[in-house]
Image (cartoon, rainbow, N blue to C red):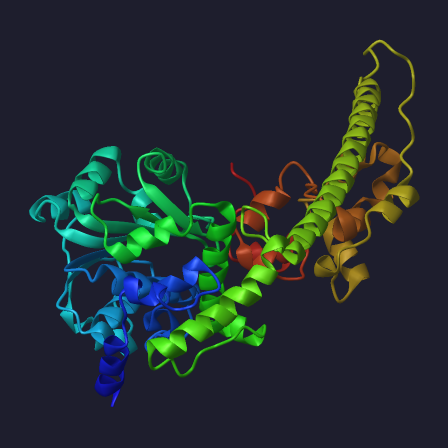
Length: 457
């Protein structure tokens, strides 16, 4: 069924001389072809589908003998061109280069396509000179090329050949790819479509097909180029899910003969001509420009707010830096000790105040606090006078030394005497460190009988 339908569409293809004999509202309507109304059968979700009408039209206009496709990442370009070749029943050599595998649903379409192995610089010299009629480059491949590789590729394009480069308006455009495009624009005639990340077609050969020549002859002015761009954008967006949701016209049943193509294309051109003034040279509509202006104002406002916030933060940082310097100077003055000859008495230690700072740790509590205090006081490993003098600043506090060590001192790493090293005991006895027992209490009850070490000596 599909074969008969495709054959019917092929038979309806009419030469431009015959088309021009029709009554046309615009010269571009003479480029009408049934192929531009085809819907790709093997691509469901890809922005590249919006370029399918032009690619189908280009294959129909050029009737290529060899196609080279340096594919898009999802291979949509190769699938569309392969399907166009099959539906036109052309005898074409189709080579492609890609880093990905073809989608399962498209493998039947790609049965006649051959994958080139190796790098571009390795593959191109093996191709005969002036043998490629259509070459497609995704912008990612163009970015990987150097000037020598591009020169070699252009030498392989035939006298009737064209080059299509997709992604010219995408974020993947690199500085090198932009430089190569800028060098080609003055040398070759071209036309660019700005929708779906952009696609630019270059006329490389000097003896183009009559239909392709007519394309350039009908698009000499900016207004004519606008009509052409809008026409293929309209058809492309009608194929995408986004375009269908937005109300674009889709063509589920392509025109069956040229008599149906001309009125359909005339209606499209008429509607586009009536609204072509709302587009600027970049292809943006008034609504799109308005949206961009609003977004630009929003970004400018956000940038101003962010700049003001940064300035405020920098001011706060300056104040904080000055405050830190001031506090550090105060700490340095307070940390200076009085001379040894000074008769000034040391400040009396305020135990109650310190007790409020250092609350007893729950992991160091014992079930019988009083018994533990008595056990510590009676031990030869606890020196209350030394402890009070060393940590509490006053020997008069030695009556509270055992209690302080039990509830607070051990948590702070204080030693009960010069014989017992609290941190050493905890570091060498993980079971004690993970338990709720005071280290000296544990040693007196268990560790001493187990011959555990209490210091590094």
